[in-house]
Amino acid sequence: MIGHFPPELLSHIACHVSGLQYDSEDDSNPILGLSLVSKYLYQVSFPYLFHTVRVSDTKKIFVLDEALQRPSNHVCVRHLHLSSTSHQKQGVSNHDLVRAVNRIISHTAPTLQSLSLDFSKSAPESTLVFSRLFRTSFPQLEFLSLGGFYSNPSGVGPSRFPKVRRLHLHGNRNPHGLLQLGCVPNTFPVLTHLKISGLSMAVSFALELEEAVGVVSPFLTGLRYSMWDGGDDDLGEGVLDDEEAVRLLPATLTHLDILPAPSVSVPVISASGANVTASLKDAAMMERLRSIAESFSCGGEDKGREGRLQFRLLDRDVVGGLEGGSGLRKEWQQWVVTGRAPGDA
Image (cartoon, rainbow, N blue to C red; front, side, top):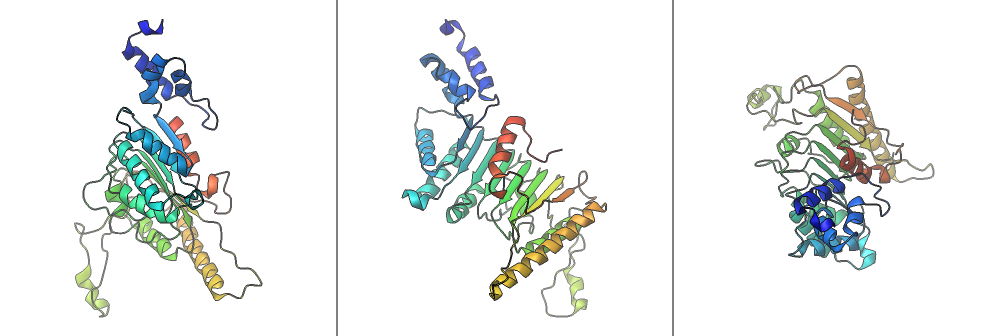
C-alpha cells in the first residue's frame, strides 16, 4: 500500500520525522523507527538517518567514519556531536583517531548546522583536530562547541565560518591571544554568543578580556605600541589610526559568558611553593573577572556594538548539572531541538 505513494512525498515525510524531538538516551528515535517498518521505507529514510548524529565512544567514531566512506551512503548530516573516551585503554592509535575524526568533519562540513566536539579526555589529539577544523569551510554551520586544548584561529583570509552565531570554547585554561589580532571577529564575523569555560590561573587572558570589553568602540582607537626602549615621548609615533586599529570582538556580539574552572585550593599541610603560586594566580584572575562583571552590572557597555553587550561571570563552583562543568553535549542537544541553547533570552 505504501508503494502507491509518490517517493517525493515519502521523502518529505521522512525529512520531517528526522527533525522531531526525541530522548537521545533511549532508542525512541522516530526516523530510526520509520526505517524499520519495511525495506522500502528503509531506503526512503536512509539519507535522514544521519540527520542528527551523536557518538560518545572512541570505537564508535571509527564505525561512523567507515559508514560515511561507503560510496552508496549519500547522507546529509545536519547536527553532529563527537566525544572521545580515553582511547589508550582501547588500543587505539592517536594518529588513527585524528585521521578518522578529520575525515568525518570533512565529509559532513558542507551540510552541518551544529557541531560539538568534546575531546577533553584526549588533549593531544584535540589540538590536531581543532587546528584542522579551523582550516575547513563550514558554509551552513550556526552552532560550534569545542572541548579540549583548542588553538587560536588564525583569522587570516576569508571566514570559513560565515554563519556561526554561537561559539563555546572549553578546555584551554589560559587561552591567551584568543582576543588579539582579530582572531575571533575575522573567523566568526556574525557571532552573537560567545562562551569560554574552564579558565584557571588565566591572569593574562583576564587582562586581555578587560581590554576587549573596556573599549568604547569595537576598534582599538588610539591604541599605543612601542618598538623602542625610550620613554613615553617615543610612543607618539606608535599611535594607531582608525584604519589600522584591530577589532577584538565581533560587532555583532551580544552575549559573552565566562565560566572559570573549579577553584584552585591549597591544602593547609602543603608547603609547595608551586601550589601557593597557582592559588595566587587563580585569585588574581578571579579578581580581574569580577571587576569586569561589576563594571557591566553598573551599566557599563560597549556602545560601539550593534546593541548592548551582556557580560556574565558564571559561578565556577556550581556546575548546575552540566556534564564535566562544560555542558557541551547538553547545550548541543538543546540547540538541535529548539535552535536555542541554555541561557538564551
